[in-house]
Image (cartoon, rainbow, N blue to C red; front, side, top):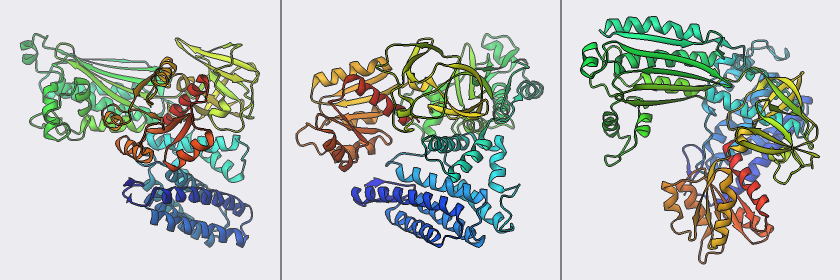
Amino acid sequence: MTEWSGKHQSTLPEEVVARFRVASLERIERLEDAWTQLTSDPTNAETIATIDREVHTLKGESRMVGFTDVDMVAHKLEDVLEVARERQFQINDDLDLVVTMALRFMTMLIQKKAGQTLGGIDLPGFVRQIDTVIHDTRHQHPLRGRIATSPLLAKLESKELIAGNVRERLAGVALDLFLELTSGRESRRVRRAWNQLRDSLAPADPLPIAPVLAKHEAGGTEIARDIGKQIDFAFELDPAARAPASVVAALDTAALHLVRNAIDHGIGTPLERMEGGKPPVGQIRVRCTVDQDRVVLEVADDGKGIDFGRVRARGIELGLIADSANPSDAALSKLLFHPGLTTTRVPTALSGRGIGLDVVHSHVSAVGGTATVTSSPSAGTVWTIEMPSPRRRFRVRKLAVRGTNVPFAIPVDWDLESSADASDAVDLVDELELGTPSINPLTYILRRGDSAVRIGAASEPVEAEARWLVSTSASTLVGVVSIDNVECLVLKPDVLVTTTGRVAIVDDSEIVREIVGFSLKPYGIEVFPFSDPAPLVGTLAVRPVDLVLLDLSFKGLDVSVLIQRIKAALPGCQVYLHSDRNAIELARLANSTNADGHLAKALGREQFVARVLKILRARRR
């Protein structure tokens, strides 16, 4: 049985579902072409009929196959088309944008493999936005064009109101649109959608951090006095530090709850502290720094530390861990952010309901940040919050790359040095699938500290100032910036050099297993060799990997069944056939066995490493 979209489990044969995927993606391509034609020629009855037919068929087929999320979006797309029909297909920007995004989301949902998630896409929220656009559009004059206060764009243009995970996914959609434009597939519809998302996602002017956090000193002092505790507060805040409004709001919420937590849970009464060999007056330090593209908040106390034994007991009571489990303190610390978990036996007016730390985690996660804690009875507790905070303007080196007309930019904190060795240079056009790769006459080594990577280029670098247009997630290879009003792709070399991952090689040849391990280890990739596929699935359950390379020479091996078991045990894991068979036969076998791809053993070692690195980087993106 294979789990597909959302709540549905399908027992259809794999080949039926595979045919649906192929047919639906082709259908969406026809829809995109027809929609582009319609925005140019709203009276073309044949184009209108094509759109109606393709959407209706897509909705019906997706429902039958069990892709319920696709069905939901297609159903709403029919509602949008009905509104467009009422307007005699005079398409305003709101309708154009929701159709474009709907087609993008359906493509991603159809391409999603069994067990994979699309974290950050709020489909119910997107559907509600469509409903809002439909409602407001019906109350507008049909021929007025774009309305100044369009509901969807108004929401997007309130830049700092977009939740971090949704912003990250929208940034991914925006980048996808921009890359489509750079690949020579220019269209008015794609250009318009790109412009709208770009303007909505560009970082707003940052706000000062210090005044927002400083207010918690007075509040903390008052709370401590009310519950009979003596505490000295030290707030170490840089008056010049600034961050986007969404980050500042998350810092404010985190500081509020972490200071309260330190007062109530960390610092004891004067008598308790003296009995524990500590001075009667406790210390709470709040420190906030802005370093490069991140903000770090620390809230530290010199109290009694966290009782991890009590945390474990509460985790067992709530069914979060097994009775027999003995997790580390680091693992137990993550439970503290679970809703409803508290070590307080009797709730007070201040805390004890397991809500505060959950609020911290949710607000910090919403802007793409992390929350961690370290603690000991002697040293106390330190809570650390880290959040991305991209600078709006920064220095880069701009250079050209053959195969695309869009310039690339490299942040200046990476040194560039020319190299005569182009053997392992990354082809950025191929990496981003922008078009046909071209041989670049120049090679540069990007170096920062111990990290280095080679790239091909067609021009010498020129230093310039860049302004963020679309800041993508930390694991995405590129973002979009403006340099002298020219849109450019800014490269994040970290993604190229930190391709850490875990790979299982299943091959009966000891030499092949050793070569794979030797080749990938220098890139920080951990390799797990298997001479027999029998123990593979059981091992993956306790030692997960990102990629399985599977040889086909094992007698009696049902490759399809094994791949199905691997994906059931480890959703999201990529499985590639690795064999000495010819490329055509391997491609056919990969398709028939539901493998994610294939790597021929005939590849040279450098080509093999480059392909594996690209697979792992694509998985991170």
